[in-house]
Amino acid sequence: MAYITSFSSGTVTPINTATNTALRPIKVGSGPHAIAITPSGKTAYVASYISGTVTPINTATNTALRPIKVGRGARAIAITPNGKTAYVASYKSGTVTRSASPPTPRSGRSGSAEPRTTSRSPRTGRPPTLPAASPPP
Image (tube, rainbow, N blue to C red):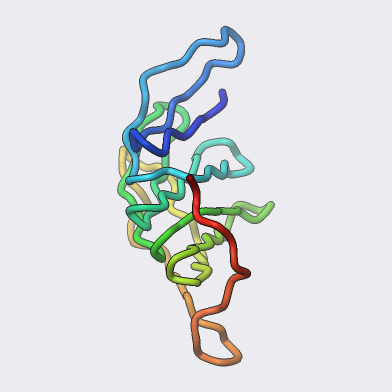
């Protein structure tokens, strides 16, 4: 399965790579920009630029779970190899949000609580500065 974002429609379209067939689009936050899939393949996380959220998708059912609020202009997401930490870079707020334990799909909703996040530098106490980059088209 492959997942393709549509910035303008606020959806992610699953593609069955065995048949090259597009499945029903999944509604996520406004302006989806990036996707990261956990090492287990059970969850895809979609960073949405306009809404400043990350939406987990249960890949077994292709359903969106409760979105997680992150910084404005979420445009990149990475998950560590052990699947326990996700990092979201937010262009407009100039922050990197760390999720100590990404939520996992359970009973059609995200984990039992919002993930612990931080958007401050431990050294300075200020939001980290990201390199300048141009916004998406």
